[in-house]
Length: 476
Image 1 (cartoon, one colour):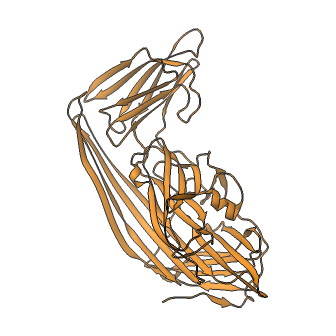
Image 2 (spheres, one colour):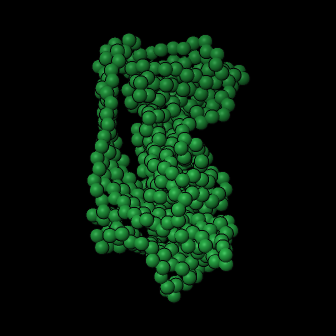
Image 3 (cartoon, helix red, strand yellow):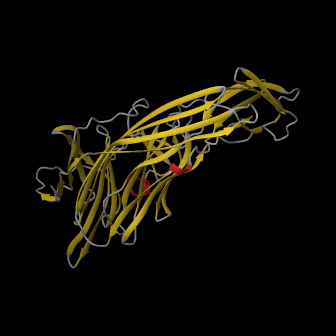
């Protein structure tokens, strides 16, 4: 059944004072957590090294050794010599690079390495201790390169020209050994319109990117969210973009939409060589629910607030009381943001109010959303339009860094009971989302090559199974 917005009497609500309620937030430069396999570090005298060995999809391992930091900055002194010791097929393989003159940085590409192999590194460093060269030894673990993928693109079913809207997507790391930094960008028809730079995604974890944009022309537009500039370099660039279509109209309309999705991703990778067999499985689970609403009437943005109750199979699982919001802008055109710390549900929206021929006209467009990932990275446009803190930052969706992965328990359906009020006008919608299952997957390999250095054939393969259920309901 379709449910249209209805205008209710205002007597049941009390106008609330404006008060900002924000989740705790931190600058993008600060990692919210780093649980990946650490880089090797060691020190001798005043000389120190940091080393990282990353195994790529091509079967080659990139080794980096520096007297500085692999995160950037200067590398003092000079690495004169590097000795590597590897155990291959019960043999200890020793290699030496002598008479190096590239400063405090050393790079090499190695074949025949497997995930989680041990690599003993011995570097001779000069130019730091004035009276001698230092011999620095470190033990590094070979790690898979990070693999960032963009999923769960959340779009409204319909938008109006020049009306700001919110868009979210999930960025996750799925190889499980190391995290990565990236830029999270929103594009409309191939042109970037909003971005969050320098985000961090921990190994085996996922984050949300929240954007805001507006579109000036009617028609169907392609919306894309991408993870770009991944550092260290990404395992597979083909899965770094999620795209969808959005219909934009110049007509007046009153509409809502609600959606929910649960997803489970299971991945299995195999690396096989005569001297080593490595097999790894990884499981990732995600969940999201959101409501989008638009009404062709003006409201007082100074006193607007929202309430949302979420039920499944008749039982209430989330009851968000009226969320007071802070407005950013003018009464003629402004946006608002509010956050409920108990349910972690946020509300964002924009509206106009204009006097035309003695009559006040306008609209309000809003989104009630809960981000189930540990943190949400706030893009510049989202911050400018709704929150106005300034800078590049992320907001915590849970009270503890150990709570990532908390999900609600859903039955066969979700019912959203949503109210938006300014104390005089109230809009109400009660959509029910019924779930349908989905399942798809992909695989590559086995991809094989002959290792000329150590002998034998090396093969790798990868499978990905993506399944779950999703539902959507709308009215316009």
